[in-house]
Image 1: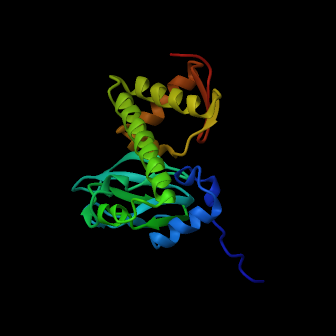
Image 2 (image 1 turned 90 degrees about the vertical axis):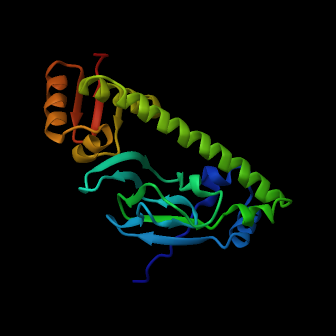
Length: 224
């Protein structure tokens, strides 16, 4: 049986909002866009690697990680389909990443080698101008996510961190019943918490009727 070829749905990606198919193709040709496949648990970039691309998650999910000298991981952000990353390195090709990007599932990434010298030379192109506006929007969205993560970590207790995170996910889903992208280990790494302590606290919150959950699907019953 022949293998079905992967066909990206570029029109559904926010980076290409406002661009028609011809304009998207123009962008892909101008910047020599390419798609790369990363199996689950592969690294896309390690901290210290030279970053030469603006990256878009076409399929799967990516985690932005900070790792210490002992290999302990802290998850900074989880990036789902359509998310843009490595945008902080657009100013100059070859900048070194201060974080790692990790394929949390089988993942396809659109790589666009957009550097300042490159897009300056194409600045009069209408499609490129639209793309740059969308990149600014992606920067703003990612910055908002990082601010929200900071607000979670500023909570004084583990319970308040858990509730701040779950309430944030409920807002994004538009419902008090939602599925988070993390297993228990990843959630502990995201909240900078001990996994055992996290599991105990979730159990207490369920026993007190604050939340209900089955694996990574949660329901918030009422505020703590």
